[in-house]
Length: 152
Image (cartoon, rainbow, N blue to C red; front, top):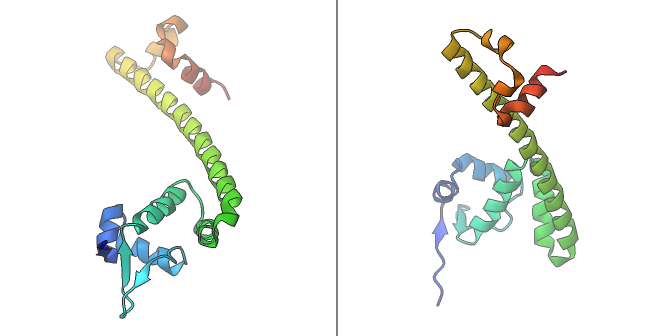
């Protein structure tokens, strides 16, 4: 006989690393149709709910609006006839996240370059040191970032 563990909103929120109010909000928005309630109306989360909540959190972090997450959850509840829709949504979000990562990598490269720039200036006691530095003096890993910061 399998024993099913139940968790309160607070316990599941702690397990998820989110505020209890987040889970209550998700429930209010209709994202948690799978969550059982006690006779007194208290939400009772099971271990299996962790997977659903993890997907919701993933989609939220990927920038998907709550309304679209709700649509996704509705598709999940509808069953296998919505697999293509769910796959398309996941692929689209993956592509968006990949673009965001690429943009953040560009931003990081510029920040790394500017850290080198100011460390070099600090050692020289002036930012004017960069006016006289030949291009070869700039470490190769910063060349592209330097170029980006000098062109409009």
